[in-house]
Length: 114
Ligand SMILES: [Zn+2]
Ligand SMILES: [Zn+2]
Image 1 (cartoon, protein in one colour):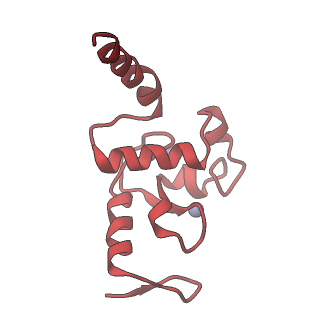
Image 2 (cartoon, rainbow, N blue to C red):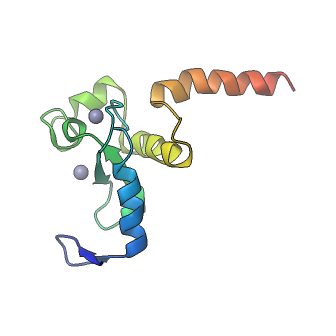
């Protein structure tokens, strides 16, 4: 099935399948469990979509609102995309906090032990 976006460009089956996987992830900003929405950083670029819950996406404090929820967590679109892609690669990856602190600390330890 070929889906069409608002602006005519047809979405390929592969891009559509990719976004479906993104939508199954938890929110990349607040870790709210999925299903999430796929936020396009740039319209028409389907492989750089970010998994967001409705509040962090379209809510009053979300990306398309005041972005206060993003500011509290010191997130921007690229940081959120990083979380989305990390989780696509390994669903056990926790939120950004875990990546930057716990995960990095463990990675550092394994480097030091060499
Ligand atoms: Zn959220
Ligand atoms: Zn959006």
